[in-house]
Image (cartoon, rainbow, N blue to C red; front, side, top):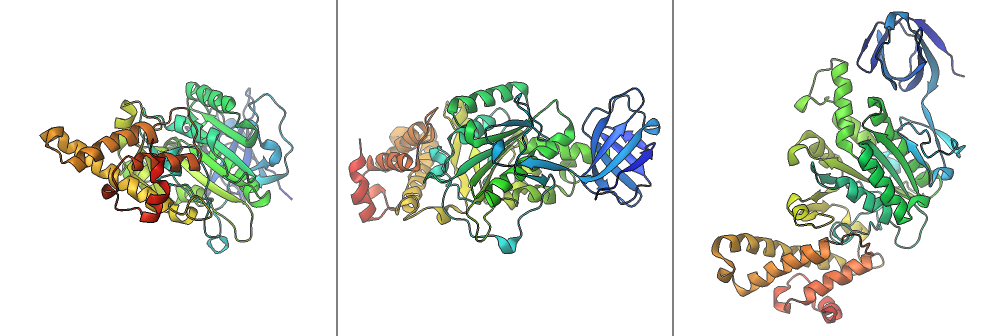
Length: 458
């Protein structure tokens, strides 16, 4: 049974944080109500339950708040959020409150907002695929159920647009129970409007739950939004037996909120001013993906990370890369050429791809098909650079063919505009591109695979 404790007068207010001394048995994540003379009650959460000082993060503005005259009420209740199948098709803010004009959901259960990663002992080996509808991912960097596969974007690149396409087009290949949970973190009003329009037009909303945090919302809501989304995703995956894809955009805004709060708390900064515990904090989010032994559902994550200054060694993408199983990298050069999605397949990687492809899953020849596309495309990119120096006439005949192949690969395979492709359509398109080359140029595919698909040339 929860015990309410009331305190008169706080020690200080600094930015979004309120500091309270002399508390008894404060609980991390506990709901707090702050009442000040002449003002509406403010809500907050305990983010540090120290022996001497308790730190409370306010969900509303602290401007005009007089800490000495305030009454602080600790509820004794951990922050919880409603979860359930009823939430599918709904739109909420970052704390789980409706923003679609409909009543608050009753749901199936209440779950703690601040969840925990999966127990490694209970994890099952990831296998089988989630189909995103994007060839550069499904064919070349296949997303496997239970995987964490981030997308590394850059300022001005369409990272959120790619997220919208994935939310709209993701499917379980064999029509198994499937849902998408999206958490928008620190997105602008314009981006929010475009995202909602894209998802609504796609017809994907009935199997989607949206949690949307805008840039104008409180800082702590950017920390809560992904956790609220993951609480719902965990229920759908591990209790309702669904295959759930969680898309988090943008984790860079989440990390900026971490840095802002750490600065307000006068914490010792780490790399580039980010808190030293950012690795642990991100791992607490990413490691909630997976499959439980004996369960019928799965939780898969695609975090979107905007790399500041396109720097993949920046702490946010760097730490993300350590925790997750690969990355999909967006290319500024492809974006300038009008390619969408502008995925650069060369530095992209899905470390669990082999577990989700092959006979009985996608196609028996999927691995060698992808290896051959990579090999010819890499040779074509090298030939493109050489042609800039010696001219195309100075290239060997095989190099000219590879250069032409690289151009077609980007224009016809990677670029797909508004088209959604199944994995089968992606594989067929790749074989058509390869069938335009002589057999002598293809050393990664077997004779049996070549014989079966060589007739696919236009």
